[in-house]
Image (cartoon, rainbow, N blue to C red; front, top):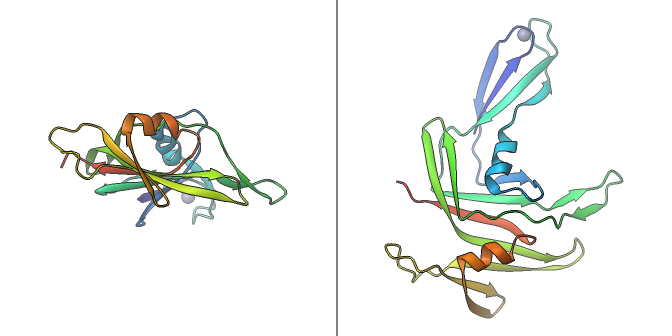
Length: 178
Ligand SMILES: [Zn+2]
């Protein structure tokens, strides 16, 4: 990611890059994954003392480059104002395909796996849905598998997107345009 900080008073900019293994996105209730990425990239205001005497800067984020696999963590756990851990059950639209732009151009990514958390802050259970590794990439049939402890069941990507809207916690998108 590339962070660009711009002084609100004199306009001087400073740029730094940081490497990430995953993106942690604030939940947009009812929103899709691209909505949440868009929100993540929005300018935020920072308190920063510039040499010009300005005290406020704006910070924008852009993707300097794109990964082979996007690991997207949806922030379903948060703290209330009284510091109690809370789980957010709002549904999200799990997109099969997302397009992300970067300084090096855009990239297309397809959902290949999803980890879902059911339960509350105190106790819960994780299950994983993944594309069937035997599904042929040239003639995809949408065969997916649900891994639930020692049980493995057949499912479809379509079903996963429908059923996991309120549970999806970590999503894996693989790039397919390179
Ligand atoms: Zn300044």
